[in-house]
Image (cartoon, rainbow, N blue to C red; front, side, top):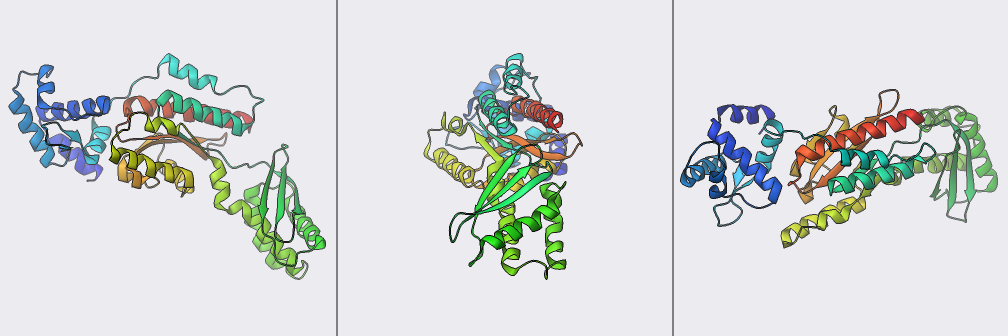
Length: 356
């Protein structure tokens, strides 16, 4: 059902149906248990019988918004129902003073390195939300100062990048067969001549063109070293190192049923492989502010049927460079978690902008 379809259903529902639907979803999100008609009649806005409530529930079930997980009369929202609730009924809470303090304290001092700071932010976000937090760190975009290749043996070498701000990155890679010390030096000299004043992204954009135009000037082995040595910064390993996952144990805290444990196991497998991490940022870039992905809407973790609340953060140039998010069961307290994720993204964005 599209957003338009969902809005149409909301408009066609009468006040009683809306209240029943809202109370069932809110009750389920609060307790994780099916909500029965008798519990709704106790504090319903109008005086109605349990039988009347059950009839409304059946109508909502027919529309695909509610489901009966067991033989009991209790209902839970479907994925479609949760989406409609989030789009049309969700009321956002305010960030509490305590939650704000914990997130603020995680920022530490300006002397802290970015990776360590983002790790603490992830820990704080996980602790505040009691879910698993995901933080996608920005790529390092300072100008490159020096590039070096170091032989570690016949089939292994180390590519070292030193940035102008003192940051150092290195990757182990497999050099071409027959590589020599002179080819190593030639490859490094070729890259250093190109790299001055350029960021990693800048250098990546011109390196292929330069190899093609200067093919006669650079030895074949050196060409292969340049390609293979520099390519390690394009691999999934780079993406894996950018994703910080904290608080996975929270997902197991209240899960006892076998099917729920299997769902969590799949989610752990996804997080361990960190597959399609580039898509995590793409999800955040598709729209401004916080976005909510429920169950199979979540391309990254669709197998586990989890929900993801994610928001991008920007650098000083208002360019999206990373994202923060919380992942957990579809029974998330969305009204509380959305403003927390939003505030965390703003905190990280200010930190990145201040350091740029």
